[in-house]
Image (cartoon, rainbow, N blue to C red; front, side):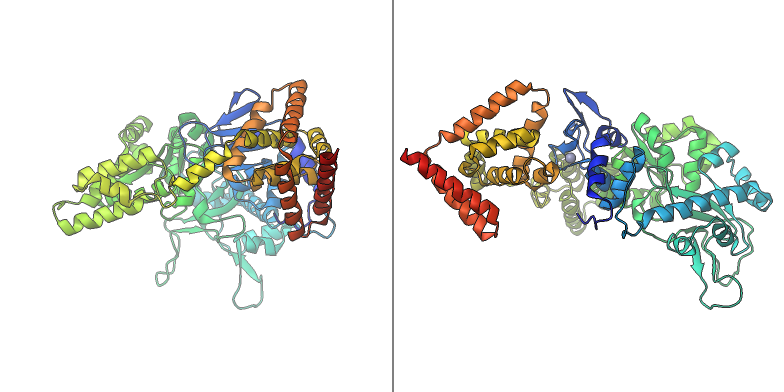
Length: 593
Ligand SMILES: [Zn+2]
C-alpha cells in the first residue's frame, strides 16, 4: 500500500478506530446481527447464502465464500475503486474526522475535480432556470419532465456562448487546470485574443452523472432539437465529459445515486438505454432504473450493480434486433456473476415513450414478463436452422466458452442443461468442455495436505495465533513462554512470529491477508467465535495451548528451532536469529537439568 507519507500514520490509526465499519458496509450490504458480529451477502462475489462477516469490535470484514478480508479502508478501496489515501479521506469525511497531512504532501487529484464538477452542476441548473434556459425548459416540458424530477436529477442547461462556464468557474475560484482535467473545459488549438479555454458543453441539455454516493463526477449533454448546427460536421446528439481521474465511463451508471435506495427496497434494478428513460421512469414512480453512459453495458457496470441486487433486468426493443441484443448481453452478465433477465417492449417503443403513453403499471407488467437472458441467448445460438451440424458445433463451442465463466456450480449445470437441450448436443460434453479454468481440482496430493493440516498440533497452533491476534497481552505471554519456534505448521509459525515481532501492535489486517486462504478462514472463524468469550476463558485457553506445545518432544522443538535460525539468517533478520539461538540455548539447558 503506497501511502506516500501524505496522511500521517497516527491519523490513519485514529480514523480506523473511530470509523464504524458496519455503517460503511451497510451502504452496500444488508447486514444482520449474528452474535457479536454481522453477516450479509458478499459484495465481492455472487452468492445466495450470506458468508460475508463484519466484526465491528475488531474492525474487519471477512468473506468465507471468496476470502476477501480487510478493514474499513480496504472495504472502501474495493467498493469505490479508490486508492488508499482517497479511501482514508473518504472515511474521515464521513465520520467528520480531521486528516492531518505531512506538510510536503500534494493534495489528492480527486477532490478538486469533484469541486469543479459540483460548481459546474450548480451553474448549469441556474442557467436552466434563467432566461437562457427557455428552450431547454420547453423541451423538457414536451418530454413531460416536471420541475421536481428535473431538480431531483439536477438537470441543467449549458448556454451556447462558448466560454460561459469558463468565466463562471474562474469567478468562483476554481483553477482552470482542474476544470480541464475534469473534462469541462477545452484548451484552444490556436492561442489568440480572448479566452485560452472554451466550454465542452455548449447549448445542450445537461444530465449530471454522479458516483453511487452522489458526488458529481461528469456530465452528459444532449443537443436541443432545432439547434443551429453545421450540416457538414454535425455534433453528436449526446456528449459526455472526457474520462478523468474521477470518471471512468465503463464503471459508472447514470442515475445510480438516485436509484440505489429503490433498488434495495424493490430488490431489483432495471437497466435502460438512455438518460431520458431513467428520468421518465423515475417520474412515473419506477425509481430503480439506471442506464450505461451511451455505450453497451459493461461487465464492470454490472459488477457495480451487483453490490445492490442480484436481480438485474435489462430492457430491450421487442423486434429481432432487440432479441439479438439481449442474447449478446448474456455473456456479459455471466462474467459479472449475474444471470440477468430481459424485458421486451413493443417494437419501436423505448421505456420513456412507453411509460408516458401507458403508465407505470403497464411498464411494471412488461418487467414482470421478463425472461431469463439465458433463454434469449440459447435460442439465438440455436438459430432457425438448429439442424445444421456446423452451426450446432459452433454454438456448442460458444456455450462452452461462456460456461467457463460461470463460477456457481448450480448455475453452471442449469446453463449446460438448457444449452444441451436446445442445441441437441450431449450435456456431459458441454459440462466438461466448459469447466471453469480455476475450478477446484481435488487432487490426491491436496487432499493429503489438507488432512495433514488437521492434526491436534495444528489446532493448538491455530488457537494460539487467534488468541494472539485478539489480544496483545497474549502475545507477551506467548513470547515469554518461548513456544513459537516449536510450532510445526510453517504458516502458523510465520504468523505467530510476525505477531511476536510486532509486540501485538502490528497491523492485524495485513497479517490475516498474508495467510493462505484456508488458514485465513480458520483464523477469522476463531476470532469471530471468540468475540463473546470471557477473559478468564481466554486466559485458560492460552495456558492450555502453551502447555500443549511445551509438552511436545524436545527433538521436535530442536528441529524447529534449527529451522527458525536458518530461516532468520537467510532473510537477514538478525533479531529473530538471536531470539531463536537464545531459545536453542534455553532448550538445551532445560534438557540438561
Ligand atoms: Zn465473498
